[in-house]
Structure formats: C-alpha cells, structure tokens
Image (cartoon, rainbow, N blue to C red; front, side):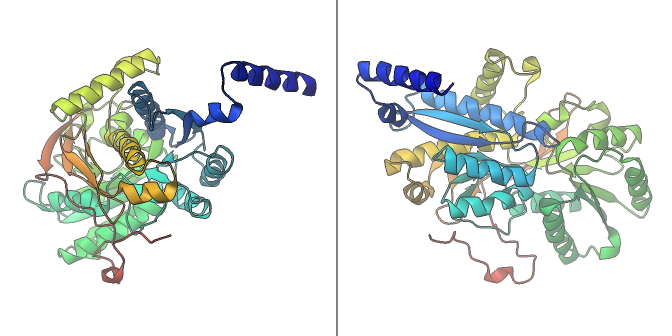
Length: 420
C-alpha cells in the first residue's frame, strides 16, 4: 500500500513536471476557503442552504476570473450541530487545510466555541447570521444583524398602533446564548417603554424540542390579560413543530402576533403556512423584495440548485442569512484584491469601508471600525405561499450598534475591534 502511494505521488509529480509545474506551484494556483456549516443535526434545516449558496458564490467568482488570478477552492466540513465539533473543525480548517478565510456558523454558541481557535491561529471568520451583539472580535466580521438592526425595531413595531399596540410580551426562545442575551436586552428595552416584568413571560426550550402544546396553551392564558405579542428566538428544526402547533391551536396573528428572528423562507418550506398568514418575521432581506439585483440573485440561485440537483430544487428559496453569506464572500474578495494578498492582517485592514450592491436593493457597506455591516431593516408578514409581504422598513441601511444601550455599563463598551 505504501509503495502504491509513493508511485501515485511520483506519477502526479511527473505529470506536473512535464507541464512545467511543481506540486507547490500547483497549490499556489488556488486559494482555499473554508465552509463551516452544520449539514446534519438540528441546525441543518437552516445551515445547509448557506453551504450551498457559498459554493454558488465561489463558482461565480471563479467563472469571473477568481481572486488575484487564482481559483477559489472550497473546503467543506460538517460540525453536525455540535459546539465542540465546531471548534474541532475550525482548527482543522485553519491548522491543517490552511484556508485563507472561513465562512460559517449559525448559533452564537457555535461562534463562541470557535472564537479561541480563530484568535489563537489568527484566522478570519465571516459570520452571516443575526445575533445578540455584545461582541467585537478582531478576527470576525459580522454580516448579520445586531440587535438595533432587527430585534429592537421589531419590538418597537409591535408596540406601535400599526403593529397591534401590544401591552404584554412572550419572549420564547431556544435555550442558549443568542435568545437569552437578546431577551435580556428586550426585557430592559420593554421596561424602558413602561412594560413591567409582570407583563413579560419568558420561556426557553432545548434544541430539537418538538412538543409545544403546553407552551402555546400557556401563551393563550397569558394573552387573556391584554394585547399580547410573541417574540420568537426559536432556532433550528424546532420551528417546524412550533408553527404546526400554532396552527393547530388556532392562534392567529390577529389574536396574538408572533414575530420571529430566526425563521425565514427556508424554514417555512417544511410548514403548512396557511394558518400562519399574518404572523411576522424581522430580517434585513426577504426574497419578495422587488428590485433588479434581487431578481438576478434569485435567478442565479434557482439555476444553481437545478444544475447541482439540490434537494427539492424546483422549490428552493432565498433568505436573509443566504444574502449575508453572498455579501460576505464578495466583500472578502474585494478586500483581498485591494490588499493584493490573502494575508489575514492585510485583509482585515482592507475590509472596512468595502461596499457591495446587495439583493436587498441597497449598496451595503462594511463599517470602517466596528466589523459590522450597515443594513436596512424589514418586517414582513407571512403569506400563504411561505413568502413575506413587507409591512415596515427603514429608509435605508442603518449602522450596527453592537453594544446595546439598554444593558447596564454598555456606555463604556468599545466601538472598534481590538488591534492585534
């Protein structure tokens, strides 16, 4: 076996030498990039599409000449919805595969798990999902929403007359970092608006939870005390049984509206959405946005899904984290070309101020100092076809505020990523 391996290596080396290339020269013709997303486990329902859209974007870049005249080579790993495995796979990508950058993660728990690895090995991570803020890492660029770009505007809408004028709130989430920290921020925000703790119900369920019958019955009883809205930070495949039970219980949007921060078009593909019409989601992008850039993005995605024979290719959809992935990869490409190098320190220096014409219809910019995108905010109502009608939006992109002003002591938090 050892002799066969040696002969195989010699054969490859001989062929490369005959074409005037060495093994090292061949490797130098490509740039490795890591894709770190769960393809199995409870988060696969959300993350698989991000892996696929990342591969589509990489193919598009390669078809247009690559980066610095080199082709991108995707290295895909599956951390299987496990935080320890996320850290292990991140170390594999950076330490063994020597990737120039990693695009990945979904949950804040998984992001927190990989941070020590990226800091130790000076890697570069693009994180594409909305999160709780309270973080500003030199080695991370956050292309999803900070709380002031999603959670706070959504609750302000629910408090408004147009949003139903809620006086009571149910904060319902999966039991991990993002929901708990976001709800801590929202509770403080609601208190500042005169909503007392007695009018706030807070409930958490584990990943993969599937029995929401009792919880929804409790919500119905709580809602008897006045106009009530539910803020959902449920993540992963638990959204399917939650929305099914919501429909079974006849809890309509006109009675108790639910606004979700982690449910978009992809998650609703597995749900009968007819009973959910009118319930809400807050994002920075919806597939239903009508503009030429979005039309082109959707067309590219549908063509890619069909060409690659992806599961249910005839019904694929786009969503917010997919758009954030697409933006992030293109911003990294632009920064590398400006820096003339994939060196992490040089790329970090070059990314601030980079802009990109995004499918949301705006030119999106990476902030010069705080590693977050300036993004528009949209609140959409679920339609019976699983798409969203926008009922509220900002006039344009707004700057991320990673540190919530509603938490004590945050007036002293930095707004600039730490230097090396």
